[in-house]
Image (tube, rainbow, N blue to C red; front, side, top):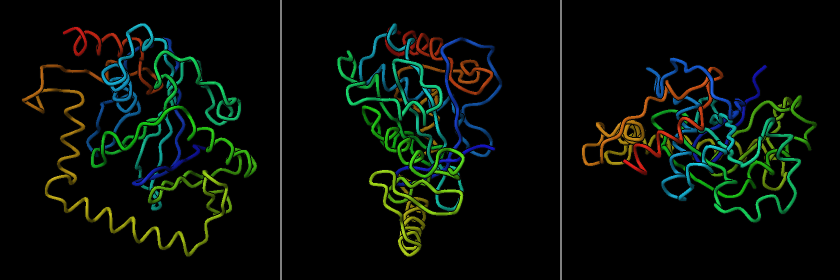
Length: 262
């Protein structure tokens, strides 16, 4: 059964997908499907692009990185955010990996974001970037909480609700991953009301609402959607491996060719 997760101010639930470094045959999975769902490869591509453009990660380093993504949903069970973990070493099972990290795992890295956590919308009505954080504190917190509730067998999902990351157990109990506190039903009800109000406000926002966010996603892959940008066009389907994750070496080479050394 697919484990579901959830995270950050806007949306929540868990779907585990790992990105290995071996190249694979491309798929026909689009970056954004007809229902507005963002593919795992697309969200990983945007994170890789950030690392190379904003953090200055060089091509060789970028091609050696590993990514694993979790799909978070909101309190109502709708897809909200992909949580992508980046590391210079293979991640594998993110819960086991998070437990295994010691306090000094991220020290002495050339690039601060070689160990990083990226929160991005899982639908095109949510932003391309909610937050990027270094190193992997969020993964460590999630992994420790899952271990404390009895492991993955007792994990129903992770819920992102108004800035809090919550683990929902198979019994329906919500636990805050930051401090391990059990969240009461009254607190969940209050936060849900606030969340629903926020979603309505975003939907009705003429400037930063859903249409603007949909446009922002398309601009990530094709400059024709944003005429003021220098020309580029990325075929995410061609950069997607058969397991649905990003072919990181190939994607990094394309980012270098089109954006770094055009």
